[in-house]
Structures are given as C-alpha cells and as structure tokens.
Image (cartoon, rainbow over all chains, first blue to last red; front, side, top):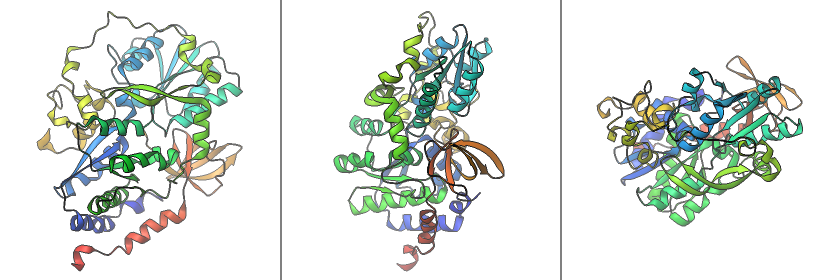
Length: 368
Length: 75
C-alpha cells in the first residue's frame, strides 16, 4: 500500500539501526506512550534488534486500558436499562469493569452494538427513534474530535435519542503525571503520532523545557520508529532536549486546527480518573453546558449494584504498575497462565493494544 | 485504538468522501479536513479523515534516509 510499504524497507531499517548502534553510548529508557506504537514495535521485532543499552517501556496510551472501572460499570448499568442501545468501539467490548463486561451483558440480552465510527452510532439512533442510543465515548485526542463532530451533527439534527457517556482523555497530562511520580526514570518519549496529528507538537514543549526530557513525534512503520529512536538518541547524547517531529507527512506543529476547534466547541477539560494511574488533573474531557443534553448524566439514573463484587484475582493484577511503566507483564503472577487473551483478567490483556496482550502475542518466549 | 491508515480520496459529495484502501472502498467524513481534494491521501480514523498527507514530507524522509551516511562504516 502506498505510504505504508515504503516505510518498511529492511535496507533503510538496517542503515538507521547501524547509526543507532554507532552513536548510542548511555544506558537509556525510552517510553512509547501510545498503545498502537507498542503493538507496532513488537510486531516489527524492533525490541529484539536494538542494542542492550536501549530499553523501550510501554506507557499509558491505550484508551481501553486506562478507562476507569467506574466508567465501565456505568456503561454496563446503562446497558441494563430498558429501551437502551449501547454503542461501543470494539476494543472496549470485552474489558471487565468491577463485576461484568459489555460482552457478558450482551450475552445476557442487553442491546450492545460494536461500532467502527461514531457516525455509525448516529445512524443507529436515527433508525431507532423509540430507543435511547448511548455511545461510549472513549479515546484520546485522535478520537475525541470525531465524537465532537458527531455530537454537533446530532445537535443540528435535533436528535433527541442520542447520548454520550464521555470518557475521553488527553495525553500530555498523563505524561506529566508519570514524570512527576518519580517511580521511573525516562530519558525520552516516543510521542503518539496520531494524537499529534490533532494536537501538534506544542503541547509537549513543557516536557523538554521543564523536565529536560526529549520528545519525538513518531509514525508507526518500522522506518518511522527506528528513525524516531535515532532522533531521541541524538538528543540524549547531545544533552539538549527538545520536541521534534519524525512523522512530518501527517503531523504539523500546530496540529489540525479545525479538529481542535470542534473539540473545544463541544468539550472542556476536567480532572479524570485513569485506571492504574489514579486521578490526573486536567486529563479528561466533559461536555460543555451547550451540549449537556447529550450527556448520559443529564438523562439517566445510573445505579451501580453494590452487591456485585470484583473477582478475587483482580487484586493480583499488575496492570496499574504496567501502565506506569514501572513493571513489565512477565513480573505479574497472572500473566500467561490465569490471564491470557482468551481469559483476560486485566485491561492490558483485553485490549489488543494493551501491553500484556502485546507481550503475550509477540514477546520473548523466555519472558513469559 | 489510535490506529489510522492512509487512504486515497476518489470521490467527494459534500462533506463525505469515498476513499480507497488497497482496493477497498470506504466512506470517510471530511469534516475535520475540509480542504482535502480528490486524489489526496488522508489519514483515516474511525470513519473520519483526520489529516491530509503532506506528500513533500513523505518523500523527503525517504530521500534523506537514502543519503544517510552510515557512521559505523566511516569510522
């Protein structure tokens, strides 16, 4: 495919790798923030070819993995209500909340539909005027403008049966939270390429300025990732941290101003609870007053049955530590035996972009 | 979840486009990229074109890498 295959050329990859090996002297840890990067890195085998002094750590950028249990419990409670259709992106379908998952609810008769686009949810709402359509709005800045645009369309059409359970989150505050926690030393960030198509490079500048940690916005093909790593190593070896863009074919410094404007029209920033990381100030989105009629909070009584209990195994799950980059999946007692992609316990194993799922599918056999 | 794929616009009707990905035709909203034209490559995510490809930059990266001197061979 054009604009994909060219960035998979083994000869170019070797050239970049040789340069990495030639200039990289220090022991360094680079965090790939985005879950899509985690999978791309594992699938391409980049972890295995990098020199030993370079470690790649997976970060918190899997929206499914960091959606709080409370938000999943809310989605489940809503799906149990009468005359409700709950629409969700496929990644969220199997993730366990405190006591169930949307998949289990669907098996029990709830009308849960997996959608590819928020526009699909809109179509379902139009076709079923007698029912309430609730979209579970998850995702980072890549996805939130698409949902904002969909909500604006719903308002224009005066669609009265369309609602959103807003669980959207924004990435830079989570990177700040990881740096502030002091639990892990990070020398550079491989910044999320597709989030950055929307937000651009400016929102990362405080990281280089205040923490002296370099950031490179990187694409998702092997050439992109290796080149992004090379650019970070050049920064680290020179001792000068800055924000740079490797993925220039799709990322501009000011991002996508139209998408940012739509997001700002519909959402405002709020504090948000990240599974595994806890409450992070100004890291979530909520609907502005002008759009509050689309918020589930304004139209549904959401009661979580307190008799439902977490399963005991969950207490041993290390997803929280793994999302912060402090532990790796093989450190977890559940990984690979009780917790597998077929029988996932924690969210990092459920989502195909979760760190545990990536380790299980592509990781080194000896580390299982 | 943040997966997005380059797709070529082959038709535009108001703010919706038909895009082609490896021979498969899909619908994409152009609300976030209203300046995109037929023939442009856009990044497709969750039914929306979220950014237009900068062809010059796409080629430049590969050209720069072709000319990248191999440090280990020189030293």
